[in-house]
Image (cartoon, rainbow, N blue to C red):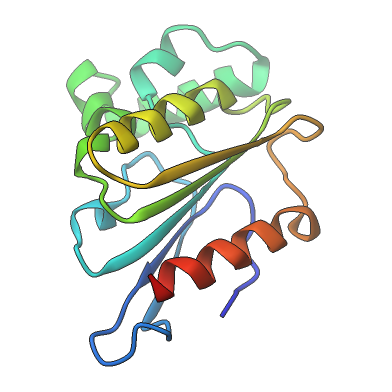
Length: 163
């Protein structure tokens, strides 16, 4: 089961107790300044992270583009900008808690996020016993076309729900 997923969202798939081959809940999280709450939920079969920020303190220290600077302003407005508030919302700093299979997709030319954060997140999840994979699309920025990423996302979702 695959849903059309816009860029900049987190998808979580909950594996129902009765039948692991169906989706009980498909949660689309709009872009926000938070770490997905589902990382602590053992019934989540998989996470798909698309065009995200995973280490807010590092990103905010040096925004690379005007779009990144605008994101920085929004993040500070939503969180107050303290190191503690930013760390609490950073998936990279909470990676050991992520046990669901995780697919991380980013565009290398993204001017709003730092695609360089995707690989360290996957490495941190895997280093803590999780199962993460990352795919960086060299030709795309923040918006990775649905038709380009759908085959990978669909295969990942099917696998995550059956294993």
